[in-house]
Length: 171
Image (cartoon, rainbow, N blue to C red):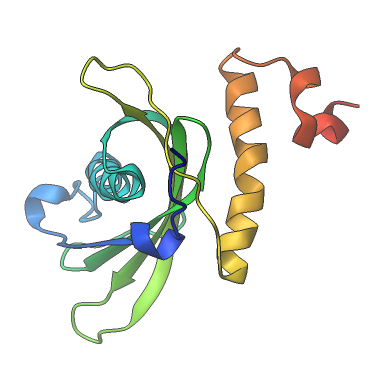
């Protein structure tokens, strides 16, 4: 039985948080660890929406802290699966801040997490294929293979010469 394909929009997860005093450091900025927690939860829900199975975090591939997030800001995390592989999924997240008095919404960070779907015993299981639709989804889908290969090389699970999408970098 073939698995159905899934559109990235079916995996969209939007999480909204108010930055409260207990979430900030002594400078009044959101603590990085708190943002990582929020990202992990939003991306896990997105990954779950792809496969409807238990998912576990396999890697925090990238988190860029481009702008500080201040006390009182509203944080909006938009997570979508960018690509699925045999048992794993890459989730790309855009992080926005909505200013608490002006309502202005600006992109301040982005992040990429990888999840693996598992059965009741914790063994990896196959996940549905993701079919990108928009231009942005297609670009993220194409880049996901290179990001995966680089992550596996850095983890010592793949040799550089085995990475078809990265051969030019190692030539």
